Length: 233
Image (cartoon, rainbow, N blue to C red; front, side):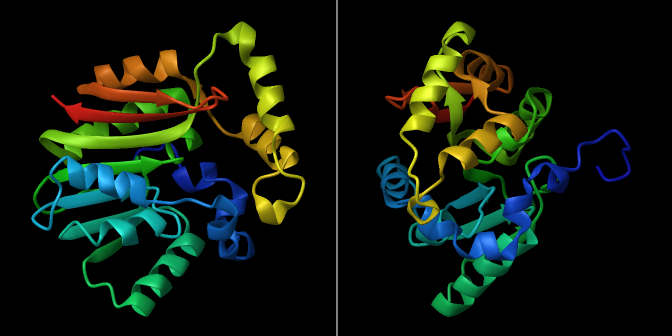
């Protein structure tokens, strides 16, 4: 895709903090993400060592390394050199042999080998404007085998436009004041201004258009996040 002068440069949209080694070093503790509920979900759905998982927007590898305990092949994909440096260090430290690291994004990853059985994508799709979200979802469908699974989690507002102000203010008011405890109000506000969270009622038709059937959809009580389990038709 690099030869197309109109194609989106994903690294330019990644957010400066995700490219900053100092920020990335503290990312895991700040995110407080437990990957194991999703790993267990995929195991319960039949995932095993014969299968391949692609983690798009793998970040520091928290999910990819947990998934490597179940899947025979895990491909961890991210556009941030700083994130990938942390991930490679964790792979080396754990002597994890079945995780491959690829420097790419949702719009540039070129899958090699047999089609993936599962694609996992958490808090990466919101880096793309909606036009490019739809393109990315179409590319994800092409990576997957027929009936393969997409586990998608992201900042997705399940609210009408008239309710955005109330939902966002409540969300920001609940943010911690100490940046070591999580993302502060100022950090979340920066995200909303500079990144591309979307609405559930826009994202869900995109999934259908890309060839996915939504088997489960869950929405946070704050109406700011959503999780989807989708199957490629």
